[in-house]
Length: 332
Image (cartoon, rainbow, N blue to C red; front, side, top):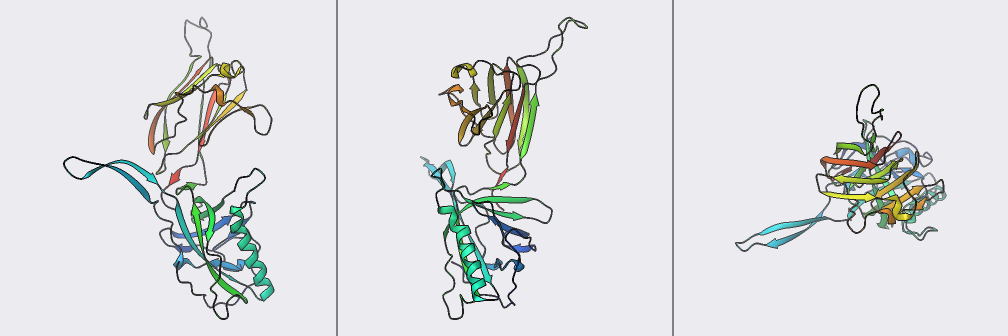
């Protein structure tokens, strides 16, 4: 844990959670502002001295590249060969100083902040724990976020004079996914070309099966797992990442539905894997059985260029494929 020293300042009544902040020099990041969004969606500014708490930037750590566990194979002539690199969860240390004009005001702020972070460990109605989100925003308007769970550190200094109208903590925030994600998603839209009459104005052919080959770019540092939306008509959907050789096919007849009609939509989430027919209900209809198991691989996009083929058999006017993902990065 870093050694925290409370700065000398005049306490300010502050602003409500969700207020702005002044860019500060964060280690390994540069000038930026920071905020924390708790599982309820409430945004807590972390670099705004008027909020009643602010970041002690000299103690911040854990914003750099992820740590990896390497799996290697010993070589007969000495040395070893790298077989696999597994990114590990990261822990971010984030010191905060909390202050107020009165003891009661300080106690209220202290309790509110403690609840905002520890709430990540409480199970919701669905039995799952919901992480909070730490966001680093730069002056140019771009930002990167990482999902966090409270681990330790909301304890105070425990020395004479602390805990009356001011105190400091060193939060340890655990991240199951060590990568930072862009706030703005990358979106891709592809649709079938216009169909033409074979004899009008002269003999010609239009494809009703293939949206075609395309190149998709992942601008991040790590594999991303996109979400797809397929719009009918279509009788068989096949997505292939030619770069990795992985593919999956979706056949509506496997779930007793028949071909997708014009305007019907299916979503495919690749991590965690999920296939849903959008029928107007909140969760849609589970269509996982429509995939060509066990050959199906719900593939991700490698960093850089990916050669991809979208094939929709039985396509027609309105047939389309939409993809969305948030690039993932090693650092904030």
